[in-house]
Image (cartoon, rainbow, N blue to C red; front, side, top):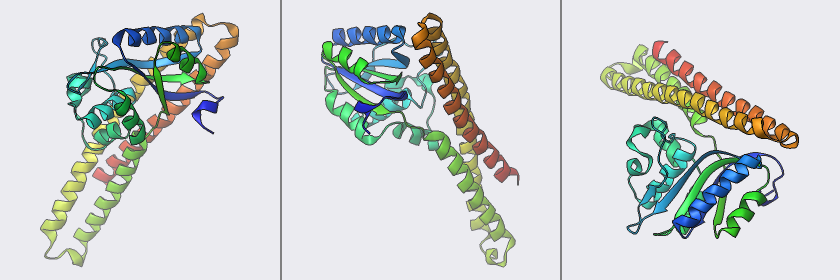
Length: 278
């Protein structure tokens, strides 16, 4: 069943392309109205501009100390910047941090390549785009409002990759390190000890990278959970009784989904620790 026929709440990336900055600001205001009504929940949003030289820049001021996260919407914007050949740091800001290992891959895989390509194709020089992560029940509300303002809507369900990838990386590196230890202890390692020790050191370094990335993402997940729950709590406080129940269901879903992500990240850290100290 396609997105156009959904009838259940889903977290999606929504990108709306506008020919002018004025229309983009009108679209941003419309997103705010739909959020205030409780029709959708806007978790993150950003306005992008494709400059005349083809680069992508953000137009909204960042709240001090609250840069875009490396995953989620930040990952989508990073993937878009990488596709059009622009510098990632110039788009997301230096405070987003250094990408390494699985974290860098998470930026590239925050959304499907097809989705990023569709955005890049539509976001021609001089055009603007609203990119947002939203919780919505039906796409019609956003689609209708954006069409009235001259916007073209592109949508994709948010994907979760990083926690699974880090967990799998930790499991794989643990197996590699265990196999290397067996090689050291076996007759097969005679005359090749230096080579095996080199392999073991590489596996240890990889496990340390996995551990650091998992801890970083665990911290970001906690911040993301608080941000999302705060936005939903504010919506619930002003929602009508008929809308309140749907918003409370969204809150339960966020707690469940991010709780599962946190468990996978914690497991990745535990696997890496066991491998390094086993």
